[in-house]
Structure formats: C-alpha cells, structure tokens
Length: 491
Image (cartoon, rainbow, N blue to C red):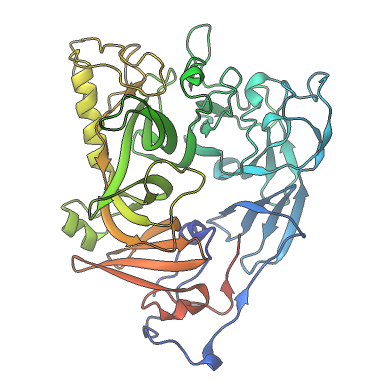
C-alpha cells in the first residue's frame, strides 16, 4: 500500500495525524485490547493554547503556533525547537504600535496569540503572524526557527488588530522566476481605515527587504486590496468579514467567509441581522482587485437550512464520486461543514451538515453573473456596500472562464445562493472541521466533532457511506488504520 503523503497528514490538523497501514488489516471489528496501540501526545506549557498547525510535506516536521510560542516537532511529536513570540508590553488601541511611535494608551503585559502559520517552501521559511502590535508577522527559518525578519516599519506591516486566532487566513501564490505573492484575508474589528479585509502582498526573497509585505500594487487611486467602507458600520455596527478557509485553484484565489447582513423576514417591515456564508473569488494576477466577486453558499436537507459555515477543504473528486456527480475525477470539490440556521455565529446550533460543492459549478454561476452585469442588467448587489443599488454598466466584451474584471462593475455580488450537495447530517454533536482526499479512486472525507469524535464519509459505487468512531477507535475504519505510535495532537 502506498504511504500517505504528508500534505494529507497535515490536513487533519485539529484532529490527528496518521499514516497508512497494511492492506491486509481491513477489519471493521474492534481489535482486542491487547492489540490496541497507544497514542502519542504532546502537551504545551500550562494554560498555553494551541492555535494553528502546519506540517512540512517534505520532512514531516510539524510547526505548531501557540500563545507566546512557536514549536517545531518531529513526526512523533518530540520537541525539536521552540521560538518565543510573547508576551510583551502592548495595548490594542496603539496604532501605529508603540514600537513605531509613542503611544499614550496604558501598556500592559499582553499575550501574543498566533493568528496565522504558513510554510513558504520556496524560501524555506515559516510565516508566523501574531496578535501583538496590531498583527505583525515574523519570518522564521524552518530548520531552527531563527528569526530571518520581522517587518514593522510601514503601515502595511500591520495585518489585523483582532485577537482571535481564527481571524486571519493566507494563501501563497508561487512563481518560478518571480517573487511570490501572499493573499491575506482578515477580520478588521471595526478598523476599516487601518486594515484592508483582503489584500495581496509581496513575498520577497530577502526576508529583510524593504518591500516585504508591501502591497503588490499601490498608487493614489488603486491598490491590491479591498477595504470595507466606513459607511457600512453605520448600518451594521459590528460588521466584519470572518474568513474560514482559503485556497488557490487554476487562475484564481478563493476565500470562504461568514459575514453579517440585515434582512427583512417575510411579512415584516423591520430588519434583523443574520449571517451569510459566502465564497469570495479573485484573479491571481489582478493587481487592482477588479475581479472581486462573492457568491452566497449554503446547504439544505429535508427542508432544514444549513447556512453557518464551520469549516471547508478543497479536494479532488476521485473516479467513483466523479461518476456519481457527473464530473471528471480531477475536478475540484469543496467539502464543507455548515451548522443549522443563520443567526448565531458565535453560538452555533449543534445540528450540522457535511456538504459538497463542485467548484466548476460555482465558477459557472459567477461567469453568468458577470455576463449579466456587463450587459447592464441589475445592480452590483454587494451587501456590505451601503449603497446597494449601484447599477451595472454595459460593455461590449466577451467574458470567458478566466475573465478578471475591468475598472467597472466591481466589486460584484451574486444574489442567488449556490447550494451544496448534502452528504451527511448530525443533529447532536456539531461537526466543526473537515478534510478530504482520494484513496484508490474513492473520495473520503473526515470530519471532527464538537465532542472530539472523528467521522469518515466514503463514496463507494455511487453510494454514500458514513462510518464513525471515537478517536481512540481508529482501527474500526476499513481503510484508515493506525500506526504504532499513532501521531495524535489535541488542540
């Protein structure tokens, strides 16, 4: 049996990391107690929270972002190196931070919460962003976590003042003969004048270069960014865009988001706040962000709406599931987890659903919307623009699959929701995370639950099969088998 690659292993992040066992051990029956194998665990310092995890797909080394610390672990969870990131004297109201100019706000000892962890394979370094000083990032050498650079002198070096660990998501776009780009998306915590919600930054070869994290393009009128208009906050005072997942595919970069909207319930004259899950798409080469389009996504099963996005992961269809869905085996699918309803972002209901989206269908819907708008039909229909009835402008041009926008009709919203294909629902133990991969032509999805259980959904011969077990019972699975020791990390 072919060994499972590390880029799959790292995707189990908040659940566990596993290898593949022998194909002769395909029993669903629980093994005798004498055959059960122990878990390998790693625990940090007391009261130290773990926030993010990435695995080097070349070496199997694990990088763990924690509060005030970055760990480098071996594949069997032995500590190889640690790097201290905090605490330090700070105040979230200091902008620019006190390390740039004197701040009149009282300074207190403040923890540094890791908010983003990315491996820059091309330059063999780790990008570690924290909550101190309005969200600056360190560049650490993968080998020993030596600090290669820590840009903080310019306004664009401060990425987000939000202290939540899940408030920032980054996607690296790599080039063979040019500097890479970092697309970074962040909640702005009521500070739209300071922080763009999405931007593209330069990843220079030299970690101490003056242009590190500078906007890919920036002049007096146009920049590689999207800012939420300040007027939006007069309509929804606590408005923000929360980024759940990000990835690149083809010529585009995508982010999956949760954002509040004010809607009028049927038969009511008053508006109430709900949360809408949306997919945002940008062209990789669009330096002016004229290609920004967002489309609402959701799922429904048995008349129940699942609209609050919890987690997502991009995978391939695989031959078996592709035949069922009428797509190619190498087509991209989005495996998503939604909880029921739309109103409780921070206190999601336990009812949840695992759903699949065919990325090509979402792109086709976006293309239809672009074609319609460039025929002058409708409005821009973007909920976070205070003026929602800006009309589309007509232009005679051909809009194909790779159209990247003009300095008109942007940013653009799609009004009609794209619905996913429900695979599995859970009424009591809310699903909170998901990964997926293709094994022997079968598309497998693994979801983690609120109570710490792991469930596997497998597509076989056009049928959907759900298997579940506690984490310690992974040998129940007919395909996923545990090595000894099982590499497990509780976050």
